[in-house]
Image 1 (cartoon, one colour):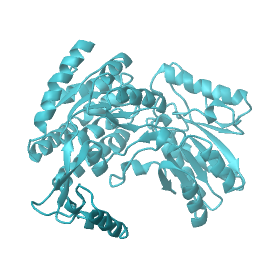
Image 2 (cartoon, rainbow, N blue to C red):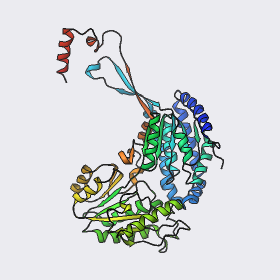
Image 3 (cartoon, rainbow, N blue to C red):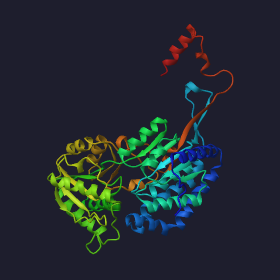
Image 4 (spheres, one colour):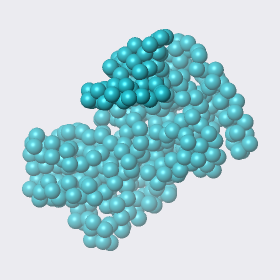
Length: 476
């Protein structure tokens, strides 16, 4: 497949940027119908090319087609439907009532495109996390340069071919390449940058954006905790956490990263978790032969996961359940660890793989202290039938999002904002929130002619104006 841009030298990127910057200015005045038509073309292309998407995802991950449909394509198609159905309402100027201090004025919030946007997408969900932000950016009326991950070359090539086939190069272009290409792009003064990836790279992106005072949306990650209280439905908790943890071989930014389990139910939960994991992902007792169980994306990440595992075991962790990794195929089986030392690397670094440390607790104070001792997570999951316990955890911790008696599916609820807080991200996305992320909410105030509510306070200042101000301030 031919990429939309072959020459990715800094000079070529600068030339492309300047050309698309001019196009972005022209897009400000186009009809909303043009935006909708682009999104409809994208939707049609996805439906027509589902087999090609399935193949690219299998070639990069050995991902099952139904998983591609359920997670990668449903997300994007839902984003497109929401945008096309609601764009007229989203883009309509919003009337704002005037306070007493502004009597006589009329005000609206006008939603204007930010301009030329850069979307840098990750490798773990390489289609949905590239095309999802693209949908929001196009719905808001922007031009977009999309930089997909070089770690999933088959999907990256597919994205380049897709964009070249259905979009004008003045509106959307794909730039393929490695970190050096991303670094060159980040030096350019984009109007907005949408980045999905690790907190470490997020800091690099934010630092580069600061040089041009470019606004950013950062969807990062971190160590998302799962809490299993004594009142939880153990079977439900085991099944739902197993799905969220081992889908995509654990390479999910909102996957449970570690579990805090009440010691009274820990043995029962561990047994149920292992049992449900086998039922969900093994075929004839084998994870390695299963068509539902993915692979680690590349050798570097495989070796990183193995090092985390060995470090935990060396520091006293117990392997409750796990198989033998195979570096030749990048097969990493599910692993359950207990008795993990707090100082082990696996308790401080984001795992991003199919290894789950389970830590027991005696009181909710221990849970709160453990969670709050770490940077704020992208997601927090609570399994409990105690309203008091749920409220205590929610009120005393901070996270980008949270689910009660469920894991991960808030990502697919497009009427909810998705995003992190501090270390796990900046800004929100999905649905209307994605439209807002790529829009400038511009306040526009119209004043009447003649006497206005603010004119009595014009200079020159007199005793009368001071007395008037004294009276006025008493109203507040």
